[in-house]
Image (cartoon, rainbow, N blue to C red; front, side, top):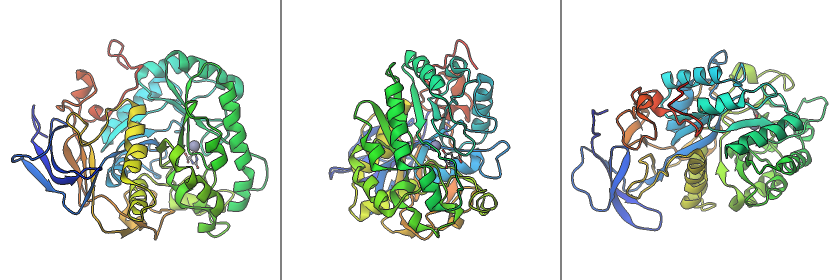
Length: 446
Ligand code: DOR
Ligand code: ZN
């Protein structure tokens, strides 16, 4: 980058959803013009490609710190942009959990020192969380709130939930919910895991949380894994997120005691997976729940292995495969991976119109077979091994190429006009990628 003014980037002959073919002229992080373009400093020829507004993934676990063998901000955000995702929201079940403004600040600076994409940080909901402090320190949302325990997440009781909702709703903030009930028992196979964290428990928890929400806090249900749970959320009461693994995988994809299929909420039957897909129109957001664990951690006995699977890099590529098979459409992919999650995050929409944020991913026509050794997560394995997908060749963030044919270029939004930050943050290239929540104030910098 590029001094006070960015170079002009032109995407030539972009097929815009709806059928128009146009050149997209990009400068200062924004689409400047859509239509026949003059010369640009950099030009990308987009015939025979699909250009999508890049994804915003509301649900990733970037690990790092004492868990850096599983993932670092560098490896996790490279994985994101190699999958066409340019903004990620980090979940707070870190070690230690993110419950104070000081920990939020440390997390922001750690991320800023390594990130290859935009990022936001969520604050944890526990009985001991300093909610006000974290709000002012710039968390995006509160949660995922464990209404049932998971890897590195303790369950929160209803009294804390209810008090927290009231507090967050006074700021018109967002609370995100991991909805599960866990029955005690031997957890030694995918079938047992599914039974111990049942669909009926998920539905019951969704109902309990909705009933508790007398303060009408903005609620977002993370990674719902059953049609019943999705359908039990009336439109307008909360937003619904579904993961690629609950759309593309079932417990039948794995041998019965393979810990690589262990995730919370669990993979269900093929029948349940298909029913989840039949709720496609009700799904507001596809979020990856990218939860990397090393091969060594995963390849223990089923009972000992942690839950969680990596997925930020394969999320949009898998959906692109379904698009080619005509199971879903391009506008649906854009809505659920980009427009809706960006709007929730307070990021201006990425898109093809003048004034839109110039974050794009450019996909070839050809399928690739997913192999872990071509992915960038430190997990070094993928539950989607051998499946067909279409990966982006080029990813653009803030009007600059950040990923091109396997090469990464670290973004720097510090001189970009689409920057949502106030200047003192934008001066630092790493911090310029941070998306602070609405409670963040410059008068009281973190
Ligand atoms: O399977 C899961 N793993 N579900 C979660 O909610 C947390 C995640 C993790 O952080 O490993
Ligand atoms: Zn979760």
